[in-house]
Image (cartoon, rainbow over all chains, first blue to last red):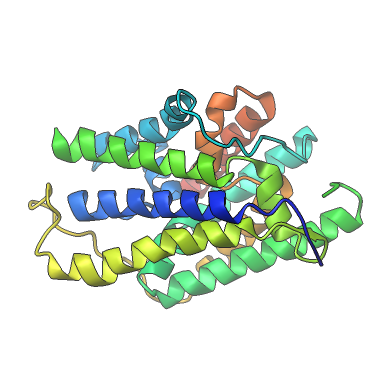
Amino acid sequence: MNIVNFTPVESLLGGLIIGLAVAILYLLRGNYTGISGIYYNVIAVNKNGFVWRLTFIIGLVIAPVLLSFFPYKDLGFNMPTTNPIIVIIGGLLVGYGTQLGSGCTSGHGVCGIGRLSLRSIVGTCIFVGAGVLTVLITRSLGWVVL
Amino acid sequence: MMRNIIVPLISGIVFGIGLVIAGMTNPAKVMGFLNVFGNWDPSLMFVMGGAIAISLPTFLLIGKKMQAPLFNKEEGFAQQLKKDIDSPLIIGSAMFGIGWALVGFCPGPAIAALTQVDGNVFMFFIAMSIGMLIKKII
């Protein structure tokens, strides 16, 4: 192990801001900030709660544009994987997997662990574990250079 | 207005700003976190730690003391649907983890990175949306 590109200050600050967004939605509206679920219910046109979910997603999309008017430390943008087949398979797995497992990094990781839900703690350990193993394999196969 | 427009819009904007500042809309940082056995970037742990430092007292302390959310007395606090550790949770989370590690995007950052106007981000986003809808059909 070799520690690189570590940004503890920016990442902790960003994490606290994410926590603030979770608190806003829960304390003012009563909902969990599970993004895969919110987004899924928008594209599945679930009429129950459609408007608030769509508004949340619009906020998420325009956030980087609003932020670009302010000075902040840009941590860059780089996609190590650009092979279209891998990008598509990755997208399908993320979409299908988050629905089957009923949560993603925000739903299980931030909200579920925040509620000390055993189900979410298990889910988070599995997706992080699967992710670590996958990177180990793809890097060994030379599919990705990290 | 407050309940359906202002509160979710502000929460979405704040969430997206947090993701960008934390560097989570950069797939290289996310894949760097999963690269524990190589050149490891522990940043994502700090993102989760910071977020949970706020979400935990929100749910377990402040939320418990409130009768209902401030602008949503009608519906009240959302209830957790499932508690059991079943095979869909395990298989789904494993599939999600593999896809997450292949490209470096989970749903939130993929949506917040759309304004990068990048063909690969868009391709991932469309595939992710199709994957979600396939689950609905099957």
